[in-house]
Image (tube, rainbow, N blue to C red; front, side):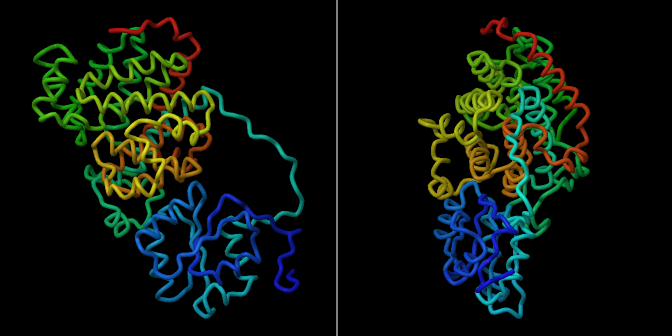
Length: 440
């Protein structure tokens, strides 16, 4: 198969959507005999510093990272450091008896690269067929199911730090249950059910959904969800006394000392985009209105409007990367376009609405598939159920329902309910939403 250690290209093709992370230039030169120049190979040049790790993160971009280090103490330490920065990476290995990557036989390296997907056997080229673009119905279903799936995968990591996640689970790649509420695998938190409540409210009264959304928020809170946000609880308590959602939100903000800029209205806003698209003005209007019902802080409404317009871009068939890059220009979220600067802020994906949406967009920008985006997001921990839902919702819209891993859909406890809801939303999409007037 080899002639002078050069690979016979008739048998294998390389996949260019990968970035291979190795220790030094000799390792890179060794791998270069197997893969062409368009496959990115990056070197840590020894034990990488924080700055070096952040630079590697930026260089990898949307590619799938593959970690291949020496099988010695130093190599294992480097692998752990890289795995912290790239929790979604796949891993290739050398044997302990080999003199590092540079001393590993090419035949062995070839098998490792084939195992992780960088090299694929190719006996003959199949006919080229362009993928069929997902229609609006497929994207609506992808958005709702993606939100629920992301929420269920992230439930186990809720309130944990990345270090605690690694110690307890390694890397979360499936619905494992647990979390503060002790959920069973496949169960969701209140984030998913509140989003469904908003969808039901819109379907019940699309011309002016405030009353119906509000009624369902009250009913949702009466189930006493353990993870209900303090801003929502405080606003609902005020509504029972005032009978006015917007006055209640302002009162709640004062009671909370102006700290109503949490992400509770953001995590429930996706149905607005799914319902009122393609009327962008109506989407913007109702996204802000449903936020102001409980969250008086302007940052919450702005985040809801931005998230909704990105979702509309997905329904229109835009590229995810292009949509985010265009929409964040001139906003507090533009910093996600500069990953090194963003990570230097040292924020976490907590309940702060700005932090929550920034980390959501960062996960989407640094991934290339539904599964990678959700896996990346939930392994950051903190409000992982919310981040997972936000990432899963947008990823589902852009990639479509067929991109959601089957094993996740099979495990999802509320799958049937969300599938029925998505069918009703899609049916609503065909009835001509432009007739619904804006204004409350």
